Length: 122
Image (cartoon, rainbow, N blue to C red; front, side, top):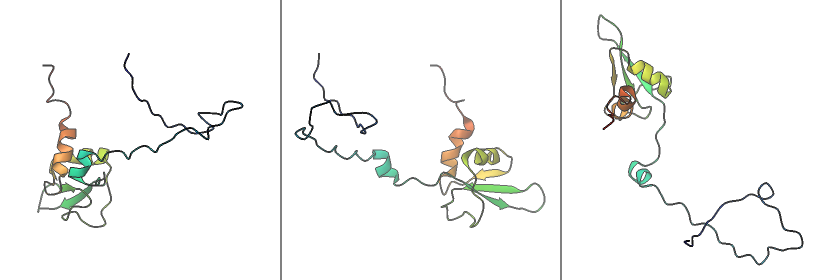
């Protein structure tokens, strides 16, 4: 058997109740240390919005084309409606739609578009 420390957060009265004729005034308590900052969060910073924006591009004749951007991209049109991830993926699958590489849209959505085809059973 190995000695180990175990900590858990409990909420009174939902999880605990006092034992009759006892007092907890002398029970030592200490605050838990703050959770360490994630290395990913340190590198990437705060999370960007999870929505996407479609900039429509019309080049003469032919079908309308578009470019998907993150809403904070400097190339994204202001006032365009926000698309959730599923809608953005639907738009990205249409011919003529490009994914912006400036804001990282291409890097974030391309793996979702290609799915798990690249994973093998090896």
